[in-house]
Length: 223
Ligand SMILES: Nc1nc2c(ncn2[C@@H]2O[C@H](COP(=O)(O)OP(=O)(O)OP(=O)(O)O)[C@@H](O)[C@H]2O)c(=O)[nH]1
Ligand SMILES: [Mg+2]
Image (tube, rainbow, N blue to C red; front, side, top):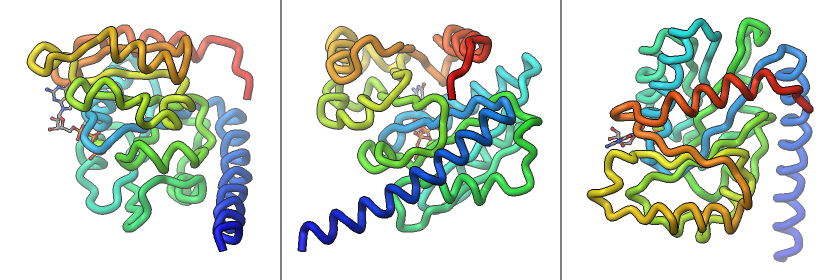
């Protein structure tokens, strides 16, 4: 019985991987850098993206976003206030985004009009780790209010990340955030990963993040 369940799951993942590979080729051909933002619910993905989209648009970069939630278009409305093209993906009972959902919601967008496509995944530290969306960069986020041990408890998410971002740094002192412990735990599951500290509320750390992202685009890209 268990073997059968595993086979079905493998089949679903293989289909997703095939679609994700096609998306990755499309993104590379269009020259768009695609990022998949993953974290627990409420870590601050949307707040961070609101600032990122606004700053990047002001600097003349072409950005767009897809945002996944089970229900509501609240996050899409927040992000669209930046002026960037934004689409909400409602997954209903599904706790993660899949490559097919990305493909479907890109309909009508000319990817070659974009420099960066941000995908905010459904808030969940487990399932999104298993679903490749064809992204170039997976960004795992952790807020100072969640507990420094989250990377150890949810290693799959942090282990598959290209960048880690610690959010809500303005609350660090009030939460007795143990910065060294957070860094050690991230490093334990993803040795050497680049870590940024930000406060989307006050803007601290955002310049370093955006500078890094702009510089990343200039590096030779291997798809
Ligand atoms: N103090 C502080 N609060 C923040 C910061 N970033 C986000 N928040 C607050 O944290 C709460 C959740 O922020 P969101 O941006 O909606 O978080 P999210 O990760 O997008 O949430 P989901 O999409 O539901 O998973 C909101 O009340 C935000 O105002 C920050 O840098 N500092
Ligand atoms: Mg959100």
